[in-house]
Amino acid sequence: MQQLWFFSEAAYPDLPPESEYDSVRVTMPNRFLDPEKAAGWWDEYLEEWQAAAELGIGIMLNEHHGTTTCMNSTVPISAGILARLTRHLPDSRILILGNPIANRRDPVRVAEEMAMIDVLSRGRLEVGFVRGVPYELSAMNSNPVNMTERFWEAHDVIKHAWTSHDGPVNWQGRFFEHRQINIWPRPLQQPHPPIWITAGSPGSAAKVGEHGYVTATFLSGFEGTRKIFDGYREAYERTHGAPAPLDRLAYAALVYTGETDEEGFEGARKLMWYISANKVPKQFANPPGYMAPEIRAMAMTGTNPYALAGATLEQLIERGVVFAGSPDTVAAQIRRFKDHVGDFGHLLIMGQAGFLRKDETIDGLRRFKQEVLPQLEGAPAAA
Amino acid sequence: MFHDPAYAGPPPAELPSEELVRRLRAEETTALYAWEPYMCNPKLRRRLRAVRVPALVVWGEHDGIAPVGYGHAYAESFPDARFEVVAAAGHSPHVEQPATVVELIERFLSETSSGAAA
Image 1: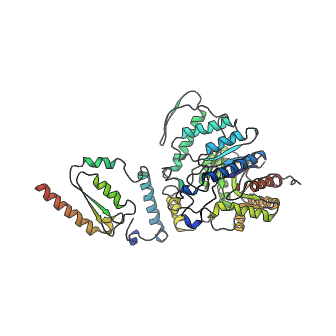
Image 2: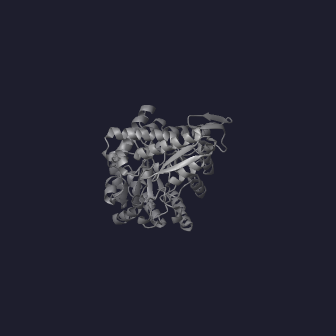
Image 3: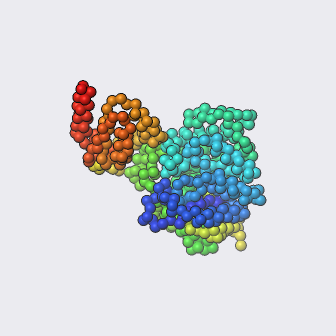
């Protein structure tokens, strides 16, 4: 069974000419954001997520800071809003992917936020944890050195807070100290909401597999995805003694389904704003300690085989970063992708970006649900 | 960092990989110890008023990390300090203009020692 999720970064696309700014992240002055326009975009984004839920597609949200590419700077707020907007849909799920817990000073506060949304949604929340992008570290005063260690200890504190029910408990760790942890409310789902953790390498995926959580990789294409999924599968089977179930693996791609191939490609070209507009500040892109020195050295001296900037739509489709076209074309692309990386249970549809408007976004989602999904699940496509 | 770009050395792509990795490891150490507060001690400035001896503060004219005005403010935080700006130098004037820096130190020591002796 293929679980679908609709993902939008809730961008602010009304940018000045590119020549007028150095970067869309960190240094772009927020005077370029018109709050009235931002409110209008948020109306569309919330309505798109609601429409996805009405179609039986899960809602996926993420969080970024100081960037035009994502106005979702506090994902507990938007998730809480959507929890109430979809309360009439008891089977609709809300995935936060994810909380940048290595950058958050107070993991107990993260535990509280997630528990509250789980209660507000009556147990429909899935909680993701991410390390976060390198650009946002300095603005959050988050030290990139020991970031992975700090991430996992924050994860431990959050689980400790979620699963302690007999009065206050303390935490004395390497990075965090906390007294009287006793969160009210506690999560509705027991022992806690399902946990997802993103992975960008086989090694990081392996750690997620050892825990048995869902792992997700974003825009990593054929080769990158296979390596990451294989890393997860090996670790999962080694730890749990059985092959990883399909619902432990998730892949995020830019996806647009049109009536025809040309309509699908046109929608995908609008989605490519996410890639083409991503003018990033070099000085924030590769901080010390975020990656191992050997990897940083490669990034500084060689070409990144996974770089997306400058690629054409056709190249991105060929690489498995974009799925676009008519329903039959999209289904064939996804089958080809799965033939290479192995089957996976969750498809995260990045179905809105840039100037792709609400009606176009929802039409694309509807066509995928009604005409692509049945093909993936082996049933004849809807007439 | 440097007024004269030649002091920065070759770009990373031209360094032997072992040397580049060694420098990046050193950057990690710097980040480990100096990320927060970022490359500074916020308590330092108010401690300077307790210094009971003359002080010399030397600053590169083209310091692009902590500009001259920053150094001047620190110098004024001492009860008795001399502030000297080194031309054609960036954040490390002792590297780019060592002779000038040595001359400034020697002159300072000579003048303050003779003043102390008097």
